[in-house]
Image (cartoon, rainbow, N blue to C red):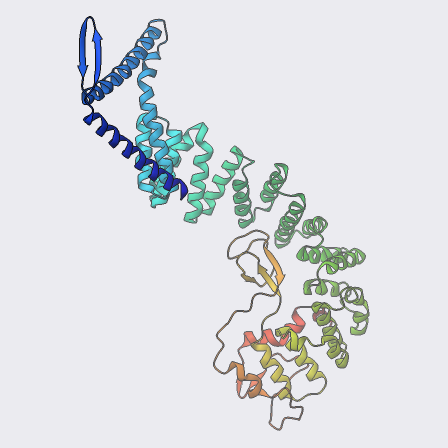
Length: 508
């Protein structure tokens, strides 16, 4: 702001000074007297100004001719490019000026002007490595993808601009959704410039998307080698890739290789829950239960999780519910106040048919964190204590419309996944899934859904139902509202949440 004001004031001052000077010259009576060879010349004020301008032009012309003379002498003495350099100076000046204007137009978002200036600069400079880049970016800005691709292909043919051309084509293929071609171009760009972080990240993401876990681990090692990745982050992501590689090997039926890969993944990152669960199952398959217990306890210490409890149950699949409850103290004693510990104890006591203790273990979760799993456990407790079918169905009705609780959620786009994956299925981000409660969205429920607990039965009513109702089994799976059965998918979610997520599943 101040600089603009200063320029305006300076311009006004200069104009005023020139005006005053011209007025002074016009009003003055004197002039300039020049004596040359005995002849005297008297010039008036206006003539003096004209004479000064002519003199300046003469000096400029003399310097140009003198420079041409020097260039000619150099040419005569054997400098073959002396005269061409003399005439090229003005062309270079115009070319660089056009190049500068093209860059400014590109930065200000004027794509067509930038292309015009780049064409003009190329006319004077003959440096396509400079002008083609402006042309390609300006063409992308204006939406002329064909022109941009044509220019990038020209850049690929020049060794000095090959990387720029390959990278530009790679980004174009990514924008067009052609990930197979983009992967090949990313590999080529990585071979040219292995230290380029953007190319490293793009190649890693494409390799992970195509399940090329071996290639992705090599790219990850290159990022560590070139200092583009902290060592602790590298260990975590390498464990993710190793786990993904193990899952692929398992799908192919190569059990031993999968076991070794999962164990290696767990050693790289002991807090990676899927790796800990898979590594524990690998040790169980080998009959090395002691190692499985050690892995699961270490992972549970970092973060209690249903998958860890499920794997812990598989260590002794045929034990009694009471023995299982006793053995699980190795886990439940670590974080006694953690939500997952309370739910696990409640489910274990349900399996042991100790319903009062299950209620004590559940605590106030039904009031403070009433998600599907919590409410399904509460319904099972009520059923075990002999409550009426109406009360049990009241709890299940609440479970049908309750939040699902913690799930695998992408930190980048907040997409919910039913199981852990190394790459988000929505935004394709790598290693962004976390076990957390997703933000509660305001979903539109079916008409009357909020009234389900009142229609089915009051939670406060402990009296025996007088109506003929279906007998709810020990762990109800298909609650009935009136004569209509609730949709199978939501009913299953509500009624089996307490048995499908954690260890009691293995107790039956």
